[in-house]
Image 1 (spheres, rainbow, N blue to C red):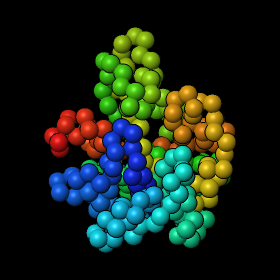
Image 2 (image 1 turned 180 degrees about the horizontal axis):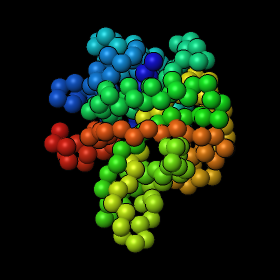
Image 3 (image 1 turned 180 degrees about the vertical axis):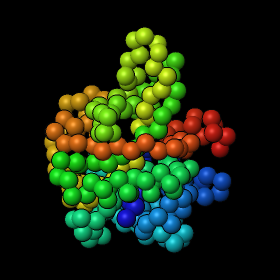
Length: 236
């Protein structure tokens, strides 16, 4: 199951999930991109989003307005829907209207590979980008071991290219996969100091000793965080 958390409030971009991308609300455009891969459900705190989802033929569930993160919203939605403990859940952000279906499929296969490993809490993906001349803290970087398990995520440039010879970085895509059991365990963990410093919730899993399995993907998709992103992409 693919669950798309769609919170209506956004300090940087109010009602972003309903902003129209080529005539289609952003959350719907995202859902349409991946509906051939698995069942898609939209998890929201807004009756307006539910009404829009239903008008386009997508299932939507109402969740609490008090969730601190999209992950908690996805977990509540999965519980409401009665998702079994071993079922696979893909957490896809509503602001990814250009995500390639192949990326989501590859992540789903990674979760299937690791679904019975109790040491792994999260599965996710990255793409390679040229090492930037200037750091963008909105672009999250990840370093991995030789087996593609995450060692650390950061908003800072990572790794630090001391000699100026490192040509690429691994840019994290904010798409997550787990079983319901993995997801519940993650949401029950206390927040971690590193998570609070970087404002990256995936660091909670690493801090508490769990593994995050990563897979490299080929993606040109860009998430839409702000109105400036829309201008840059020629959509506003």
